[in-house]
Length: 188
Image 1 (cartoon, rainbow, N blue to C red):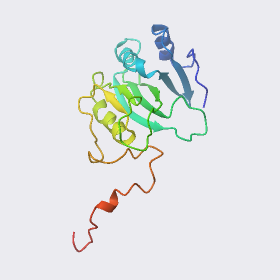
Image 2: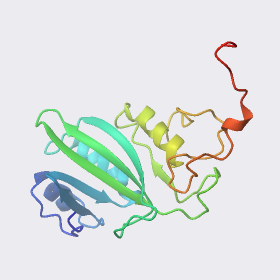
Image 3: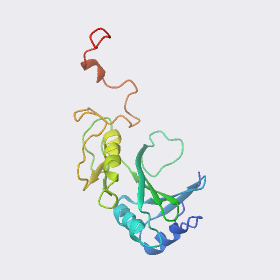
Image 4: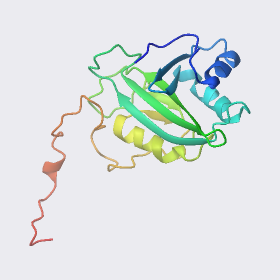
């Protein structure tokens, strides 16, 4: 994987447009296997995403996915332990750009308590389709989205005691299954 560059001069033409329009922002870019990624600071995310959607040179009109990543014990150096990656598409140009934000926790990540360092602005006001994918990132990784219209768990029950895609979550769980009655085939 290539190292991030402070002056995106990679092949994707949108990277130069973004850098020119945000000269005071800390922007980085990577390219891996022909896929370009723009790395932004958490506080700049919403402004950059709105520019990517609204500017006529960019017109990323479709948010394909929002995913979370946990880089705990990752062999290479990373900007933060967690990342949220947005997969943007321009349907008119049949073009794709990934936007990545890195976050470092300020609290122990083994529990469920909210960490103010693991919070981003929601992009649901820009792409309403982000509602469920942001909820999934919240449910699995515990990253909260400010301004989300309905931020609650989507895959697990509301009182689930942790965020299971964090790498410090035990593979066998923490006893969640032991509290349920085993149903045999004859009882079902």
